[in-house]
Image (tube, rainbow, N blue to C red; front, side, top):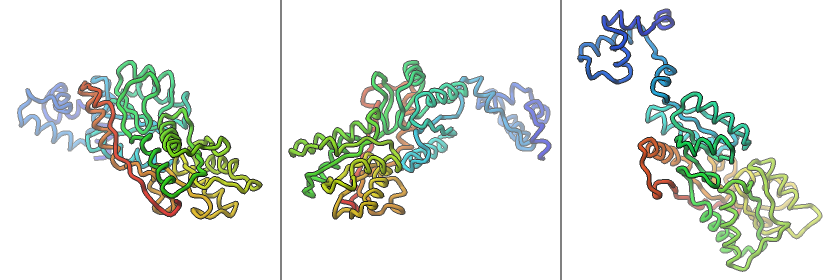
Length: 339
């Protein structure tokens, strides 16, 4: 049987079933209206006996698309991104699609290389979790190619479906947590502000604090990459050993930044939340095991998959309407001991 599987061709299936190659091709591709049930049965039996595997590449070329979806993420080591990717992959698989995962490292050139390569593979769509502006992305969206943006909205000037939470409202909620606790010496270590998500989170946080007359000191605002190491570095520049007047509460742009900030506080002997309160963002799956102390905004990563597939289906069906361009998922506040 193994030898048959290696050598089996569509002509072998046709000969065994006693039909033409064209008939086999139509049945394999689901165009069997002109074939009798007996012919369909014979072809399927021959396929099973020979363990024939149709060429996905050939079908893709004939249809000018495949049952592949590409997903581009900025950091494969980020547990939140991994959880969203898992949700999307599972939802696509239920619809008969396979997913290719690409890691852009937040680099526009790398993102463009992947986008061009994925188009050459005739993927049926591209999902971008944490996209950065780039020429190939602009060309792809403007050409009408099916693209869905996840977590970060499309770069300025581009219009495409978006799936994510209301990041501005979530930033407001973080500020309200600090206000309710009576914290006035507030700080922020936000992610890169080229990210619409990070920009909205930070702006919501700042605006709500301002309504209460709380202004962030410039020395208590830092930008960091969305990693533990960068969070630690930013916290180290903010929380120096010689300056004993530390901020009372720090909003972190994502959970890894909060992890790094926590480590810096430990280095200085600061207790959380007695000396410094920390608030993260995303509530990635590792928190319940490795950071059960971290208060954070919970983004429903488990719900992203179905929403992304639905967005693609609307695009493939040429459905339009502003109300369908955005799918806003509900977030929640996870209150733990760091605040």
